[in-house]
Length: 104
Image (tube, rainbow, N blue to C red; front, side, top):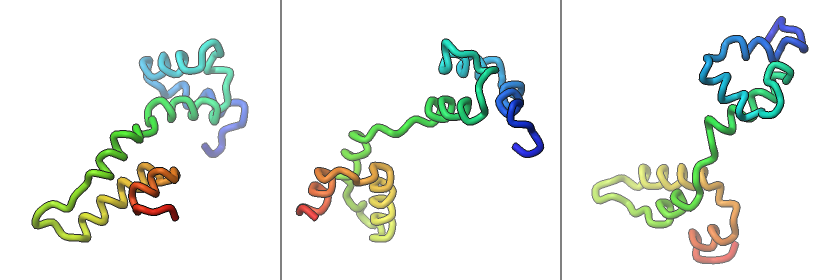
């Protein structure tokens, strides 16, 4: 937000929110008042609420049980596996073992 003073950075986005979105923000920040918060403090709870992290267990299940479709190319199959791997981040040693069959 350019050309907006630091003390008004939180008030500008609040004035553009719909009533429903403002109620949600107020609920997420309770007992504090949203009009007293900075822009960065306002956007974090809204972002986390509206874009939650995906559930890892169902994605892991699909990843581990994914098989190449008949007639599908290897490129499409690898691309789908990579998208699942990015989603679940493959940070766990258990997942690495399940995927590779060995401890890396």
